[in-house]
Image (cartoon, rainbow, N blue to C red; front, side, top):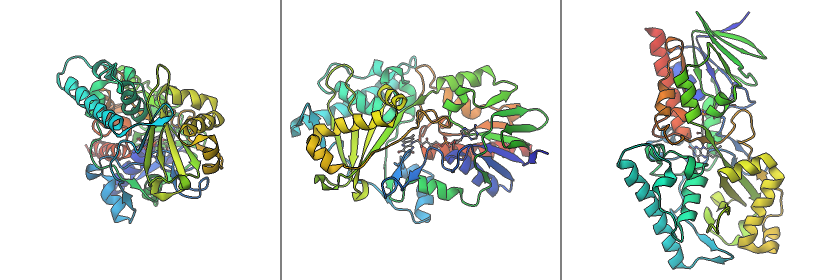
Length: 421
Ligand SMILES: Cc1cc2nc3c(=O)[nH]c(=O)nc-3n(C[C@H](O)[C@H](O)[C@H](O)COP(=O)(O)OP(=O)(O)OC[C@H]3O[C@@H](n4cnc5c(N)ncnc54)[C@H](O)[C@@H]3O)c2cc1C
């Protein structure tokens, strides 16, 4: 006998948790089917490896003043902390620190990069790649493109839609959660009807909505699908009947970017302030510097960030290669001996790119696909009884936990209205 529920939700990340929360408020019953062994998805805090909370995924509460999770976090007693706003504390050129004048030139180039991208998007016209709009050839242009483009977006500006980048720009307050962003999201899952270790491999829409996985069959009146577009594109979840062409096109238009993190334990003795930021100038073709945040909340670790193709390549090679790359990068700042003294413990590397439940960090839009987020959010399969939700579906705060949360809420409202009608 299949398990019966009114609404099935596939995935217990931020979007799935939000959808289940909203459906409970609306008096609807639901069941969340999560393939993994924990709720939270790409918001995941882990404390065992470092002895203090380490967010493998999301850590910044972007645009906190408009983020739906800000008031929830405060109400639950979580601590949001925003350090002083600086672009870099240490910026290296080769093996020497940049002078104040060079740092000022770097910061000015960042401002110009963003202003030029915004101005070009405002002109309208075809949806081009970011790289076609931003400055090239100046002493800091490659470094700024690597940082604001490849690192933060997780994809090279040559492959990322300018319009989507501008539409989803994350200006505003950017605090981090002392207890871990993943801890907050997991806390919001407490008490919800979530079945863990319950992957769904097939979703059939007929008179009922039927979900199938190795653990059994679930029959529902409606369904909200929150898995990443990487998982959707992989075919791990098959739809019957097949997805309409416009939904396939939206998924194809929103591939997964990759931002990888690596935490090296130690660093408290480096003499840097909590949350100090380290970066390095790009030196020629193929140079892909990591960016670092040292001693977040005064803790004894440093977190390195690497995005785009270099991150995918290291993800394929495995954690030992990621650690070697990270140590080589930090040795430029602290020297081999200083590095060995400061960070004597094994590193903790994230694996979002290779994990089949995610297959990347967050979505970007291909040039020409700036409308794909709205298309996915508005897709109504089976007369609106199947909806999509998740970070990919938010047209303003895509790629974020806040966007995923708002999208889950909206999908729950829309599906509930469909079932009432
Ligand atoms: C390294 C990194 C850094 C980030 N930094 C930030 C940040 O600072 N701030 C921010 O706001 N955001 C950040 N993000 C993005 C943020 O984490 C995501 O946008 C958000 O958590 C996505 O939530 P979601 O519910 O859309 O998807 P997910 O969290 O991916 O949830 C989907 C769930 O579906 C499950 N699933 C997959 N396949 C199946 C299946 N077949 N059956 C059942 N379940 C399945 C998955 O296990 C997962 O739990 C970061 C992400 C990464 C990886």
